[in-house]
Amino acid sequence: MYQMLLTNLENGILTITINRPDKLNALNRDVFSDLDKATDEIQNDPSIRSAIITGAGAKAFVAGADITEFDGLGKDEAMALAKRGQDVFFKIENSSKPIIAAVNGFALGGGCELAMACHFRIAAHNAKFGQPEVNLGLIPGYGGTQRLTQLIGKGRAIELLISGTMIDAATALQYGLVNYVADAGELLNKATVILSVINTKAPLAIAACIKAANAVFDTTSNGYETEITAFGECFTTDDRKEGTSAFLEKRKPEFKGK
Ligand code: COA
Figure 1 (cartoon, protein in one colour):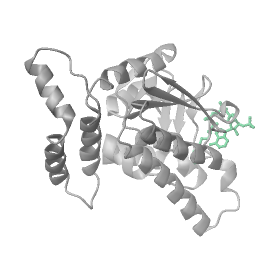
Figure 2 (figure 1 turned 90 degrees about the vertical axis):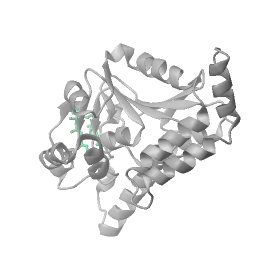
Figure 3 (figure 1 turned 30 degrees about the horizontal axis):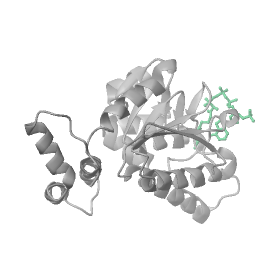
Figure 4 (figure 1 turned 30 degrees about the vertical axis):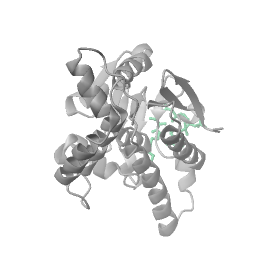
């Protein structure tokens, strides 16, 4: 089904592994096309509750956009490439099911941008984050200037963007770029444990939380209004009734996503 991804579905968690280890999992057209399809699969398959994106091999999550595809691009083609990347990453960011990045090594350029499009990130101790595009006479094109600023603040973001400096996992944790740092061998297990808890919660409420949190950064909507509407819509769901009944009856809720 996928040329560039390995997938594994277990207990409602789809693990997606970008599988170009010889090129440090660089994002070429085929990887983008597969990530686009995988995001649809996450959305459309009711047996998938959440997903993890990681990279194959011990060295890299994703070492960036595939630099070999930059050759011969003019302004219009480069803009189209950036738009395509942004569209796929918006799709990940706006997924109604949680998608988290398990960063197992270099997350550079488009790799850092992919990790930032995910709902949150956990990193292995050997992870390295950066936007080294200035070294190539470029800037990030897949949302990196925006999401890095959102996640770590303008001063730190501009420093990383204009210096091309890489930061290690401990610094990423201190900056709030990642939520946890784990041993490389424990990374996927840590991600799975986190998602196993999330997967017991009400799916429609999860989707509403993601939508409302994303609305903070959407200049076309008012996040507080989005929250009010989503709060109201929760009251039309069976899961809200199940959640409150279960609390009052002192039992665990069984959410159906309805
Ligand atoms: N695009 C295309 N190929 C890439 C790549 C990228 N972004 N990043 C790494 N590769 C390829 C290398 O060309 C090399 O291929 P080869 O074996 O056919 O020569 C292979 O992956 C291994 O990379 P290599 O550079 O030999 O590994 P390293 O351990 O010496 O260095 C990095 C690792 C990550 C520091 C280095 O690969 C690098 O700087 N990559 C580019 C990062 C970048 O600028 N990303 C932003 C792109 S906009």
